[in-house]
Image 1 (tube, helix red, strand yellow):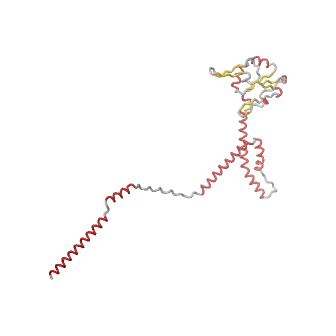
Image 2: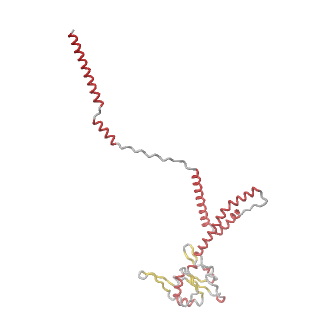
Length: 280
């Protein structure tokens, strides 16, 4: 019996040693596979470090629906701006296209509409319509009246610079001189001439024989100097040019008519018979 017992013990010991070896081998394989290598961990860390964090966009501000009062105010503002622009444009068109008298003539219908008064025989509805129409026309009529007043004021001020200072630039002739002709002379390039040189600048000279010319013609004509220069230039020049006072009257730029950027001598304002005016 002893050899059988010994053999069974030896077999059991070998089986137990094989089982232990198998467990150790399986545990070694699992441990090696479960623990990652250092290179793999380092590579994953470097990839994660290279990737910069993506910034998140800021949250969009909350929008609220506009209030109804803002729409009404915007509508009124743009409507008022359009009305003012149209009124100014129409006033400019009238100023360019029509004269003051033409605008005043056209405004009569608007004035009549603003002062409309229904008759006593008309019905209540007609009276109401008439009063409503008159009230609606009152504001345009007042605006047109203001425009006409402003335009009249502007034109009066402009006429002071564009028209001669008076409708009669010369006094009436003496009854005994009604037969005398009026000789109108220009100052520059007629009685005088102006020269310029680099060494001395501008110089003004009398024409040769101008003294004898004035003395002789003063016996037969009424001599008038009509220049487009300022009176501060005309008066002192005439004082030195005509010491014998052969020139009766002096007219300067204020007595000319300004049109299209030039000053014109208006002979119709001389208070003389146009058939007896000689202009040189």
